[in-house]
Length: 148
Image (cartoon, rainbow, N blue to C red; front, top):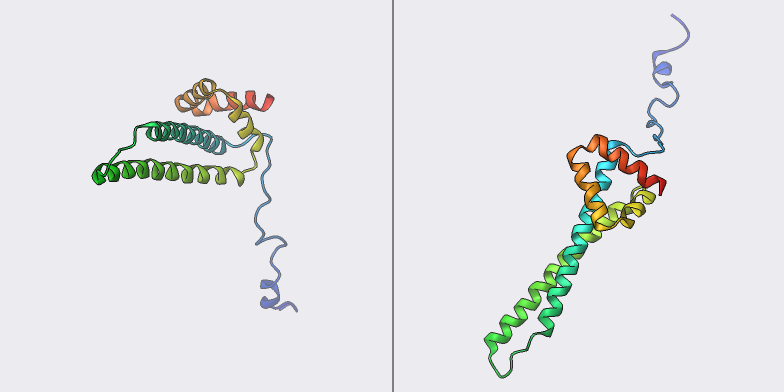
């Protein structure tokens, strides 16, 4: 037998054998990443619209005539309605915070910024195209956004 023991062979694995593969860097995000970014932007826009709607509903609620006198049932109902609006606003804001946290962990800030600059109709058109044929349409949309 040779002078090498099996123990010494076992302890000398190929260099980098257990190292994770190097990160893949590309000029454009993968198809899955693009789909995720589009869904994230869509969710952000939907939540912001719902928050705006709830703000308007709360403004109307606050502008309404408050009950006068000592009708406790009417006061209780009004308090409950105000609480419902505020709770819903809080839940929407919490969901929006989650969406924004997800963005903070991503490397595609330029794409997020470009998407956020689109008007609602421009984004909705891009999103609808993406939903119809994600493979073809998203690549076209991303190449346009990257050029911005």
